[in-house]
Image 1 (cartoon, rainbow, N blue to C red):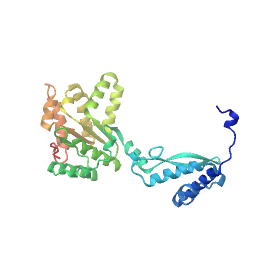
Image 2: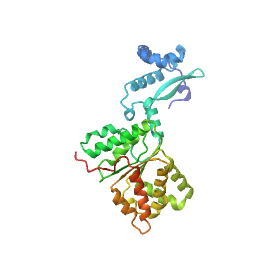
Image 3: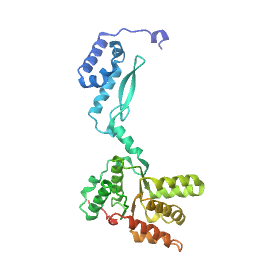
Image 4: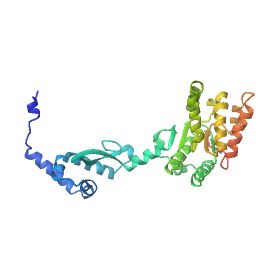
Length: 304
């Protein structure tokens, strides 16, 4: 085991060390782009550069990783979405990390979601990507969503059909573009999870319930994904949450998009299943029908 004296003893560089460092310096010197963007603005001394040579070598590598970026998920840098950027603090060269433009874009993209109940794997979905299906309803739906987006319309969308008919994918693609175009904030909610959460706070925390309800009333775009039979059978939640939420968005002309495995008549019958529910059910479905954009959109199973 080395003594402290041995640990802190200065060791002269070998000829191989000096040759290696000179080679690294030469590589940096020849890298005009890196020198212009990173080295020159620092206006440092030779000693400062020499003392921090390996930091500049790391910064050079990450600089070119960014120039040949394969995408944020495949980022090769030591800190994903950032590049090492040397700076001078009190005459010392120090390591800092600069976020890349893709990281900034992704952060701004995510900031517009109050709630986002879908995987980041779907963040790349765009309406134009949904163009592969030679189906009249799908084409009509895609056109309708694009018109709502481009013309800043406040109409509602109701998509119904069986599972695996890509209902959610259309809504995800719309939300992604809505965020990228900075149209406002978004709440994309899985209705099954929403109902479980609402049931939990409804009986336990009225303040939290009211705050959550107000958020969903006021968010620019609300998407309810999976407005299905198996999650809409609680009449208390229907009357104390769903109906007031839809009424609020209707009165305030707020955007609402819904996917379901039920057509509107079946949805009405489900919501009206007890003798007190018929009027409330009709109030919900009639508003959906009135605010719909052009039509209700039925999607069938995809045949690939």
